[in-house]
Image (tube, rainbow, N blue to C red; front, side, top):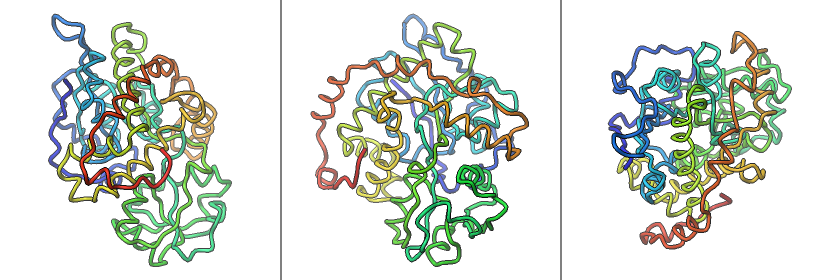
Length: 384
């Protein structure tokens, strides 16, 4: 019932970040969505709701969005009577929020930096579902490094894939009590991880999911995982603020999020099945990574996605204090022109409804799923 739009670019997360890390990047490439209004509408002569979801990456060929493909494969979207169009989106940094704000899409997946820059610029959007409650970014270190605490990064060299990634790292350093001016940023391009493994930098910016890929490439690195020490938020699903005040459109958001929660629960119960479903959605993923790396990449992300549930607040919960600290930090760094409020940036009002699903039924679906031999033989490396 949902529709995945074409993804021929094959752009990786790294390439997307290189092009779009600066929140103020050009918005000239408006892509294939232009000219088609979305704005959560009921399908003609039915109670099916049409919803368009847009990625920030310019591609759908990643393990990150496994919940969408599981919800599609298992029929959860159809059961919730929501017809989902899944778009890769254009490459510009703010496009994911601008398309939502202008009604070209209904739900976007921005980073905190993109979300806050968009709100600061006057876009009427807000986060309705915190996919990852805590930090998705962290630091990679040479395997021989003596650094054991992220606070030891003061005065060190930090490798980035793009100079624009400074806007990601600076708030992390401030949270650690480090003056960003004390560090030296090394713009190492696409080989920033390799440069760090070779000792050309003391640390490199990394994120959940990438650790598995770098390990598969043979890079000798160890990690300071951000969600273990940072309370700053990560990417979330954003929608128009006005849609929360419209009963029909609000219902459309809730239905979409219910199907998402069902898919997240399915993946937690049977991670290999979720990875197999996602991996088989795009043949290009096989060229990027073998099944064991795809599963570990998904697992790292899934552990972050389950942060709200582990905290007893449910999937999609935003930590208001973490967001407040982040909003204060980016204002003091000059990344927003005014100090944004927590209330205009995030809302938890849909979280309880989204989590009101039949968990036993989902667990039964997960138990009944038949894995292919190559997936049944893969070993899960850690917690979900």
